[in-house]
Image (tube, rainbow, N blue to C red; front, side, top):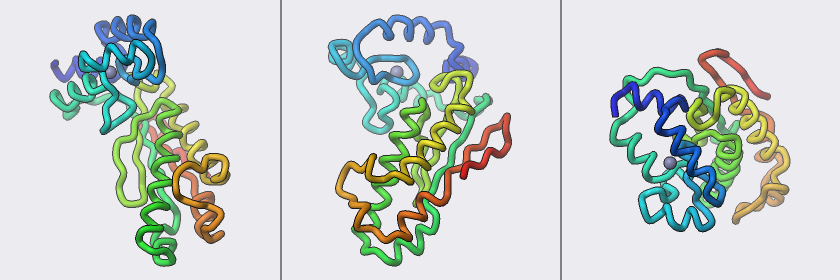
Length: 204
Ligand SMILES: [Zn+2]
């Protein structure tokens, strides 16, 4: 793949990828690879996982085939419009000082999980987790041409999940036992979505 072919695939403009998406969309069942639409569930997922289209454990939004190609060919030198979403926990240092290490670990794990669900649910890609921050990418190939709007919706969803933790409360972390300070801190600071087309869209 050339840099232009990688760019075309990521922009959602590659004829080969569009054809593959068209075929894969007919196979059951969702969830699907955000890039090629390979199904991860149902009979389609069962068959395709044996020919290289299994759900990637490293990034569950993509199949191992797509992720492998991106890793192999890299994205350096590719220029295209991308919307980035940064979301972190306000006052995490102070919160961490009031918790045991295991509790704080569980607290952050819970944040990562809920934020990831919101991001993937709005067709974004979790790029990385750094400290108390999660970074997500939204671009044409996986989020469609309205990727900036998708990022904003994801940002609102992340903030909303922080405000109503019990409704989205899976796992071991018990919100009702946390201090009100911790609860407010997450809810009080929304994530920020920045786009190349809209330089600064701060959510609150
Ligand atoms: Zn794929």
